[in-house]
Image (cartoon, rainbow, N blue to C red; front, side, top):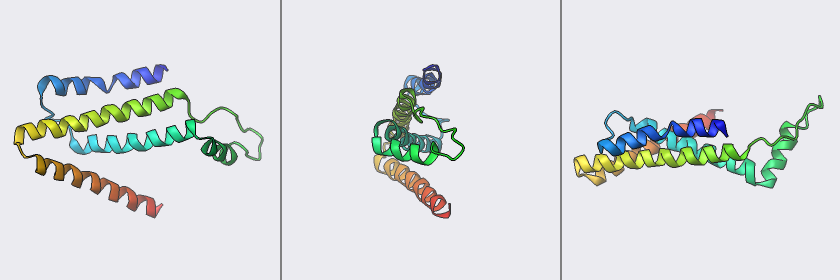
Length: 135
């Protein structure tokens, strides 16, 4: 759990700073949206490998039943991995919420902010789909 604590603590200063300044100037919206998408995917991955017996069986069959006999019965994902993924997703989502909220407060144009965030998110999902299709 040391990894979980050290990595999780790193998310708080930015959230606290944004709240104190009531501003997110200098924080990249693209980076923040990518963090949300990345940690959402990581959360899904760790949750399925931790809680789904079917996924665990498939993982064990594919990666731990190799011909050299060095397979391990150790779980691929531990509870601290799931806790970190969900915690990181939550705080990244809060950061994106702060970006939208404080930008809206400055501009008083909620519709434009929402369209901008939707465009950015869609752009990254399309790029991800393109990369996955190529691989």
